Image (tube, rainbow, N blue to C red; front, side, top):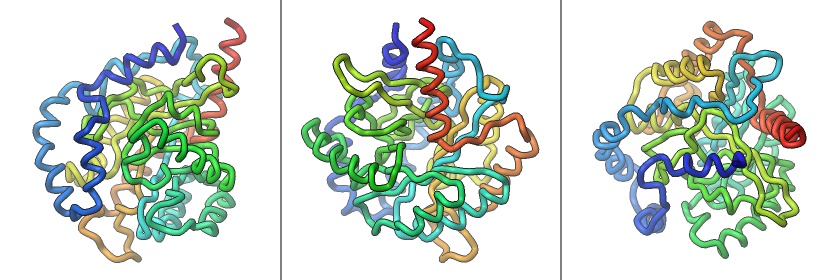
Length: 332
């Protein structure tokens, strides 16, 4: 069985996996619903979602199974830590440098994903600064309106526009808005990797997870000129889920999941939004959490795991994994 075929059942491991009529209707009316009301609605569902996901979130025990032929991380590293960021507003753009500099203090590099045709102008100078300082720039959806996968015909038209931005930005990575995913459709994008899935997350609008804390390869259909792409699932809960939806006050859930991933030698990938971080030099927002939470988490990574973790850019991990996959295919 191919790796992609083996992953398909896992992509539907969580109940309610289809992006159905209700979700499509929600994204059409979402722009007209005040943010405070949207959060109130989401929080009203939390108790039920937590109860239904007991035993599968934040840790899904079966996700620890490594892919076939897995030989471990480069240079004998115990596990990988990949930091990614989706920038979703003008406020988020204004906080990107603060976040990048905070990570630099701990010696970490990360990937920042920008919306090419969304609520802010292309921050070209900021993108340039990030790359010059060792970070990566990726493409985050097209419009970030929840309608990317509304229809196959519509997606193909949008894919052409997305590919233009991928080329212009010299990007190799993509992530859809709201973690919506149709992995078979993404072969239309000229990318090395996609990061629109998660191992387990019942709080997402399309909650079917990959069921794995390891990267995997999504093979192109027969006859395609493309070989396929690497899928990188986030495996640590999103910051918005922990600190805005669940109103956690500490990074304890991150730490606990990180320890479990490290124990099983997997990929700890997190999506942190600069939009939601309360940096002292920016106007306070009630939809934010203090930067000290990130500092505590980064310090924990350093003190607990030091040199045993591998912190590559998402693109470097994907390139390494593809080479491993290709060599395994040749040997077989």
